[in-house]
Image (cartoon, rainbow, N blue to C red; front, side):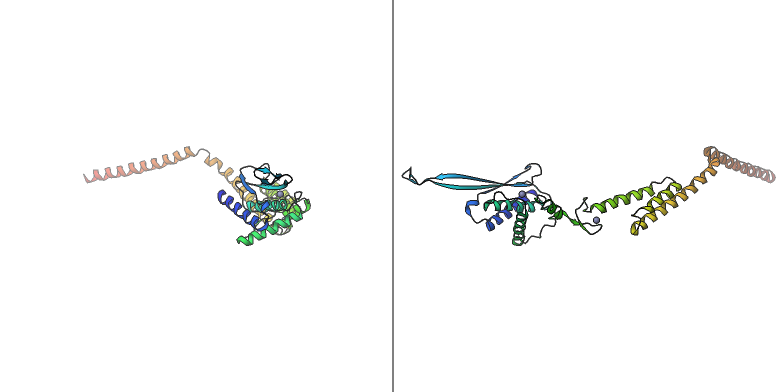
Length: 288
Ligand SMILES: [Zn+2]
Ligand SMILES: [Zn+2]
């Protein structure tokens, strides 16, 4: 999605949420700004401002004594980045709107707690439904700021593609720590076989592989096949090594041998030519 398209949608969705959930006109002085950089690790922010003004009733250009009244004013600034990756911008809208909502109802000291996130979810569900949006696919980082560390971890858990368990992803393909470790160990076993320099080493490494707890099921099939292939290539190599050493003396000086053969062939032809020539001469002499 283009950055401009993203910005327009941010403004549009935020306006819709404000119209639906912030009815008090006192709290509708909201400025949305976009920047390239908002601060380290800051994806968006909401800054509330509140100030008091003394308003007098003025008659004939004069303040009426005792008519002064303190009035509260509010304004809000919501900052977004000029561009977000993936669906981050949609998370940023509902996250910042939730802050805005809490400020407008006087909860200035609110935190990133369960109440915050349940409201965020409520606002997002409303927006999705109102605009017919397909819900965001990855909400696992929504609670990254949750005050409860356990909840942060719980939220980040994903289905591990290798073992199917719901775990905290360890790597970019969302694998869990133990699957990640197993894969690393499996690769080590594969390399142990692959990098064996000779048959003796291969056999000894194969014993190590067989002793591993990973040597089972599909891994076993793969490792056995690899071992067999390496073993075969070693026996082929042995034949190759033996053959040239026997042939070696005969191909020691190939250019000399070649020229000798050519010399014999040319000599042979020359000899045949002379014999035929003499034969013709004899015949000619006879006919004369
Ligand atoms: Zn926040
Ligand atoms: Zn796993």
